[in-house]
Length: 346
Ligand SMILES: NC(=O)c1ccc[n+]([C@@H]2O[C@H](COP(=O)([O-])OP(=O)(O)OC[C@H]3O[C@@H](n4cnc5c(N)ncnc54)[C@H](O)[C@@H]3O)[C@@H](O)[C@H]2O)c1
Image 1 (cartoon, rainbow, N blue to C red):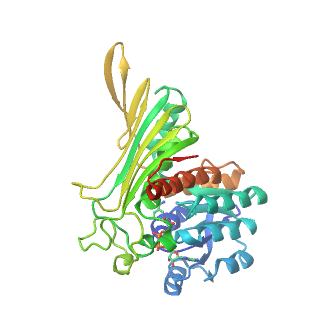
Image 2: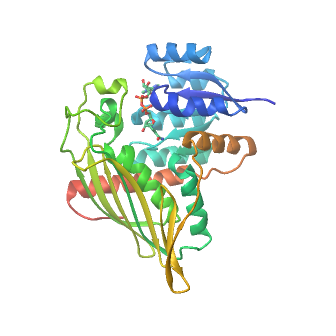
Image 3: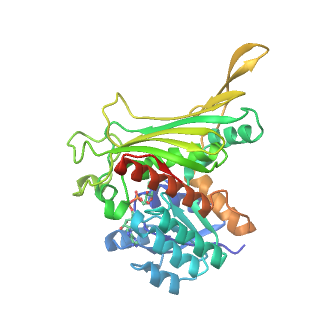
């Protein structure tokens, strides 16, 4: 069987714990080329993987490499250009979340995907969790009725990743664009991707370069100097067509007891929550709670399996560029609402 040749653009943290093991785990794929601007990391990764083709410039990689597909896992400020270079070179592209720094960039990427016909998939990995997949199927089957209210949060007490994450020129934003994007995307996807109508958003930068021991990150970024010109907490209330609302909150740093992630979904026939999946409904005039057994899924393995399935079978992705564009529009609107103190209408 001819292997699908993979090029990795950005071989930092998520490439190492997410993308590389996932490609290695799938017999259809073979990592043949890698690119990073950090030459030490590039050399070390090439040795680890036994890869001969190495590049410090992704434009050169797209010209010279015969890889079929790329994973873009760089800082957010190069997602757009690396993705477009890949699409124009006829490669299938999996780009990490957030899709880009802004909706304008995401729209440009999606436009090139449409023009070239190359596959563009956005790395919204949290959709692939078994409990989220099962809940989405139940919602699609109408078990929860009309989903009119959703609540989601991704909150850390002290979990600022520092380095480029906290430098707006390289990240585009802080806690909201980094981890809030997961809660936002999964909620919107569970709701059936409704059209956003308006956004009321709040963001804060209260903690900056705090000295408290970090709970979430143990990378070399902890020792990097950071600009800290991004949000460390965000809250938003988003209205969608069909009288639907989403309450969203995200923090890298906040004085709460302990970090948590939660996802709640309320329909007129039933409610549900994730981690673990539970349903709340009525049965013969009694209130009943149902616990649904689920499996543990390694999210990047499932995401990359789907990416390879799409390449192999020519199928459409469940995470298309259009979804990334809508999510970026909502993120932009949360930042704008926070800046102007006004509700933003689409
Ligand atoms: N899906 C998830 O759960 C998840 C988790 C972590 C990170 N991410 C995303 O993955 C991306 C990378 O995050 P990370 O934690 O691996 O960061 P990282 O800093 O550990 O790695 C990024 C790598 O990209 C390289 N790079 C930067 N600009 C480049 C360019 N123009 N060309 C080539 N290489 C370049 C850097 O040198 C670095 O090695 C970010 O977009 C982040 O939001 C997603």
